Image (cartoon, rainbow, N blue to C red; front, side, top):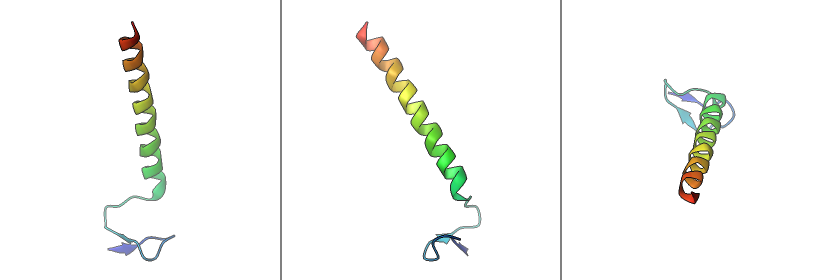
Length: 46
């Protein structure tokens, strides 16, 4: 276990990645959700 570099009270496991990877995955998920919402809306509005 390690300490988080910016938050010493947060404990990281050996496999945890830095914040940038989590942020990129969050953006990808948000983009995917937005596209899916627009596709569903377009399909239901016809």
